[in-house]
Image (cartoon, rainbow, N blue to C red; front, side):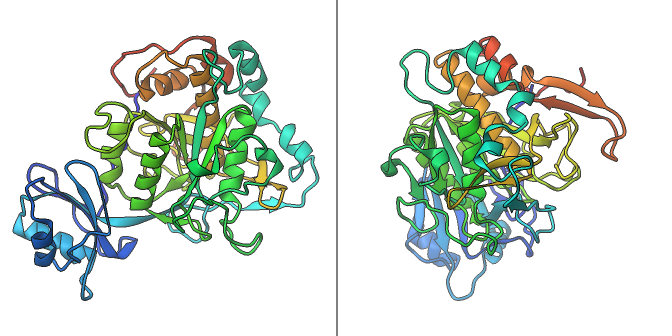
Length: 448
């Protein structure tokens, strides 16, 4: 099994002095007056900023060598800054990229995703009630209750009884929803990276803002899959389901430093970036604390995207360690028609069609998308971690194990691109044996 440590290289990125260069694409979707630049330690930051039309004091900075978020001045665009750096072959720059915008993968109106809407007010038989939430198909499909019994835990560490913590980076959460009673971390450990406070409550209006409820729904799936974990809601997406690269980086660092063991990312964008690649290297404990100020490893589940094709959506399409890219399957163990899927970069699948979960206001609803599949895998990862809390030193050991223990299903001619090899997560298989540790990270062997 091969994993991926988010090797994100955005289309607007420019690699200088030993890094491979990529072209800057003017139409890339990014924050119009911000640019992300990593500089060598000896660089005079004020002088550098003046040379390239940047504010002399960076907006924020992180890591060693330091990565800066600069604001451009006088109408200078990020692409112009990056192009100028490239033309001058400025060896002070280790990498430079735009502050790319990202989105929940169920967001409608984007050229790279089909978008998947939710529905409320249905009868419990088809979704929309607490009864439907408790009795839907996916727990049986992945043998969840059998896994709880075999593991002897639903998310509490077997060695000390402490809960595994799952960070949900999304549109926020309805903290008062009954599904989360007793299941959230203290509010001091939550954060809203959109508004800059510790109240990550979802913003918007049900049925008016299409993204409203996404984070609550995703968190509710984690709560159902691993009922005894603590959920750490981190709001990185606004009411339109839109976020940005710098914000997601800050949230991952926050999660690791506030005690999260697992993180769920149901977000995507159509191009590679660099900043998350370096961060996920650290989070997989390969260079823990070397470049970024983090103190704990983090397993990451990422939704594959809803492109309905083999066109890659990132970060799921990165060939990286420390994360699982999750496609969506159906209740019949076939591949969901909307999911992005390619054997070269998808690690595992999980049910993602008509998944019933929480919505703001104490409501429930059914939503389909790879955003619904990823938190199932995050929940399974939490149970495995709880059962074998100290078995392995690195996240990819646990994640490789989950993928290796998945159900292997094949069929031909669906979807149109030919044979599909569906590795669908199985909770019972995942907890029945301990992960094999200290193995080098490797790509899942899809030729078997």
